[in-house]
Image (tube, rainbow, N blue to C red; front, side):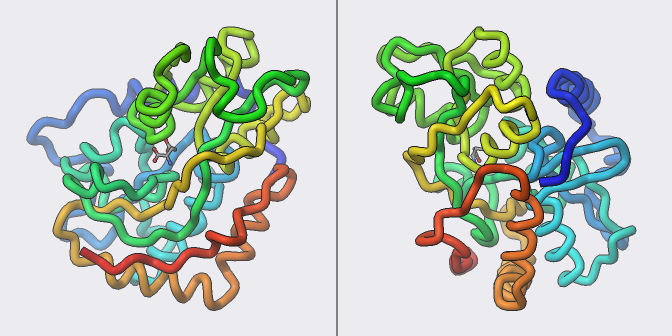
Length: 281
Ligand code: GLU
């Protein structure tokens, strides 16, 4: 992973600003800088606060999701300058696709049956697993079985928060935040015992935090298959799957994983990666 100079507090502040900026629904208006209707550009939803996956760093956008998005958009016929990136926080992804705010989403977006009721997915292009981030000197949390009586932080609208609520509700206090950077701030401040979400996200946050005072537990307890979010009925799924297959076959996938996890203590699960895209709906 590239060295990120942006501190966690600054990241949290930036994402708060970005959140408030996109808070109001644009009712009936022309989506300014939004999804292109018949135009010759494409608007892609990404995360802005997940180092190594989707990160806004000034005018630059970096991370694995962003690089995969560029590759796929290019295969669909869009050049770099025809791409507009827009922040799609976990809780807003389905609605932003439904409202036409974005044309497609690459944002650590797990394919689930529930989400497939309202949107379509292409992919998957990566498989992660839910894990836990704790203080480096923590010895009593070694996996999800140790969560009884603990305070956890996760993100509203994520499968991570959902899993805690369905499988570990008893005895776990869950703090929900709009983004994972805010959860890391809560962990660093001692407000929670652990942050939970996908291992690759936690590894990136831990590396960006820099001072080695956090660690990923390393006992994944779910399969998070990252898909490309599309509006329901989109005709782009087949072309996106073809692009993903090409990206894997030509070696780009491997290069992008390596480049974006450099410096983070993370290796993808080789039994599940690289995945084969599902058949389109
Ligand atoms: N992959 C999970 C999800 O789609 C967690 C990560 C996220 O919130 O983006 O909900």
